[in-house]
Image (tube, rainbow, N blue to C red; front, side, top):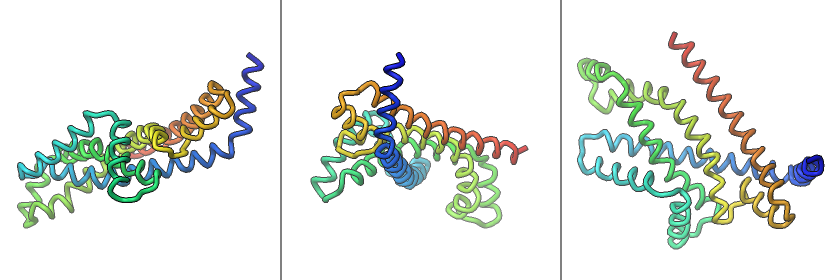
Length: 222
């Protein structure tokens, strides 16, 4: 047991610079993917709650396809599909794939948040002369966005962990680097234990921030 702890410590010391850089790349991938997913999510959420049957069908098809297939399959499919049309780096191909994947889940987050707003507020907005778009933009959506932030925070944490799958297309984020280090050092157990520690630290930090924000919202409501 002491020998194993020494080996784990040695792996940590020998790899921390590379893992810190990979951790920053992981955060970058996660942040951009969530941004892309949020834009797509808002668009498809509005399509799903629209009065147009065509838009509803398109939104439902997108959400069903994305939520019904594994993320790793989507990454491989989109990577080889995108790069066959336009030249993209592995980084951007992975980010776009993650963004499209998250868009389906974020669409449901925004749909629920929007439909959770009391319809009386929209009716009151129409009564004072606003049209439906103005009521959505000025009254409903700002409140829905506020409600959506906590589940969006959870989605960020999920995406942070899911970003490890982009290693399959050659992106050297945390897990991709760990896979290479383990293969070269033959210390698979110790290396993956160390990289698990980095993921745990990141998740704990963002979980704490999310809890802090949720407590702040509860205080403001009371």
